[in-house]
Length: 302
Image 1: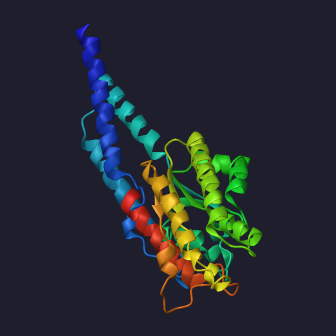
Image 2 (image 1 turned 135 degrees about the vertical axis):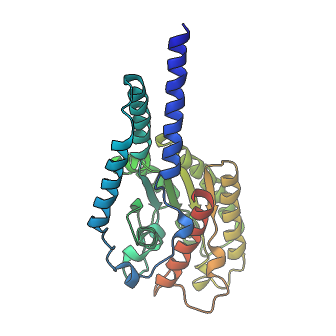
Image 3 (image 1 turned 180 degrees about the horizontal axis):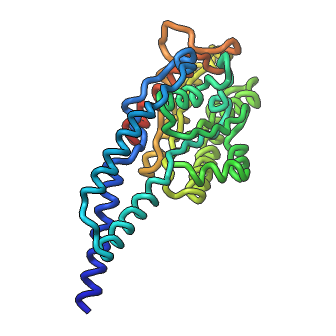
């Protein structure tokens, strides 16, 4: 009985060593080292690897292998088991799914691919392809519509394969209340709708976790463009703060959900950060959003 037990323990040790080697050599993106790039910078071509350098490395590896003693059948089995373990984990690529409203789609940017998601994609993959980013932003989406879109096959598949899910939602929920009560604005309908929004937000994150229990979810906060149209309604600042607080408190209840504030990015700034429609961010506004999201990714994923 001792020999099989020793063999089994040895196998476990070998697999553990293999996993340790993988952890020390894997190429998971280090978000701390990413710098947000402008559209012009993003068009630069990625430098190709030197093929001669790669050949020299392979020749060195072959030389090392020739100097190693021939393994016994048992040790060869252990090595293969460790290699299979490394291969299993290294086959997993880093993927990001972005879903939400017009802010995810990139409405307001000169090129809609220049929205915050597009800027993140080009910045992270500027030097080499580190992550795959799928964008399912849909202009005008409210939280109930987003819930429906989570059942689309292409969205389900993307979330199932993703490590990170970025979400922008809630601004159109608020706008709906504004439009329905524009002649008699008061806090009560916003408070009622905020409760419904919180319930749908819980359903949204539950649905994402059902598709992928290991995903990290980043809920992007709402900024305040409403003063452009309703500058005389002082309560709008309070409404935005209440909705953002609701989302932030909700995120704090789960260590896989993170709240990313953006309201402060669009306050008291000297430059113009809104597009011609005075509602969506322009390229400069989206760049600030991308940098803020990257800061949070750096802290939590790096």
